[in-house]
Length: 158
Image (cartoon, rainbow, N blue to C red):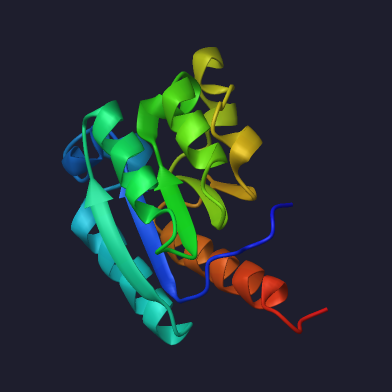
């Protein structure tokens, strides 16, 4: 596990390609809630945990990499739902590897229960943990996991 060297309470939630279509695209897989609903749930959980949440969505790999770079030195944690980039974006992997705070990988569906090409995550190797298959509940679970990890890694905590 990496040690958190960034003080603070900012958590950056990153949403990858096609997540802007949640609620419309494959509702039988991803549910009927829109991305804004999931962000609202995560924001509420963050407030309960004493954290601030900042959200960004992009359909562009390079923009997500830039957002990870921009979180360095100012955010304590990242929650990343990289969508299909999860399975092949080595540039996102490398950016996340350079981030010094907590990283939680998040998926609405369970990739391991889907098509074989979804079974591999290049993000998982640089994440502190992965939350998959819980639908919209995963957003609150991810924030809760971040809060616990940050508390455990706070100076003076054993």
